[in-house]
Image 1: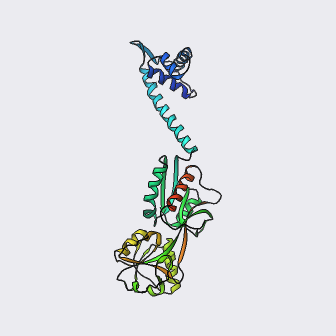
Image 2 (image 1 turned 60 degrees about the vertical axis):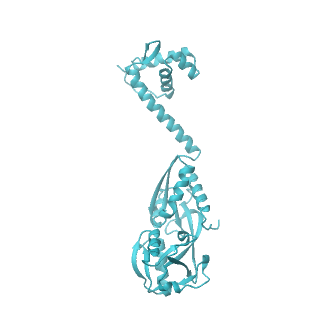
Length: 319
């Protein structure tokens, strides 16, 4: 009967017994472990005495595990595997290559940002598990402030919380109008980013696909309509800026978007306009709580995010 009682776990014990079973004898195991054969024999005898069972027996000139030995070895295999995984993960954390990283991304941007970003993260940090939280900017700022995510990707300015940030790129808020709409004839040369300019006051009769209330791009749109003194003709609302752009391309209505989403060559079914007379330029940044910058795996992931944004052809923000 195995003696009861709590005993400290010595990982060396499991390695020794595993090697004896693998080599089929104490002498060969001792050579493989680079220890003296008498020491290993004494260790095995002491272990069997403490356990109250015999782990090996002689059979055909070799040591073979007994029934108790087979049970011991199965658990030893699991313990050694766990120990190996633990050491690998800890080593990875020391080199910023392993662990869980939580990123907050605006729901309006996830389809635009995530595919290329996650591909790069998997390639550069295969040991990192990434959790992505999608939401509107206000929700993301609250999450990162309360340390529920490691960092977020959002536009400045921030709504309620004091956050530190690293600029990623600068983008322009634009109006996307289906070709054939009367508004397409209102554009004038001289807008920002190579686009013609358009005044919001002239769009009162234009059907619009807007983002749902509370989203930052919707707040920008509402502010522009209010400033122009017009009530927009809203035909549809959506949570996604990508969906709004797709619906504009399909001719459902004009939408507000970002030049980064439209790309260098916008869809041929629409025209893209800068907002006149003053284009709206905003920084897109990575942000985290004040005095609590990303560390370890999160820092490594952040550096990859920066490289992805810099290498994507997007305009860089001022550093």
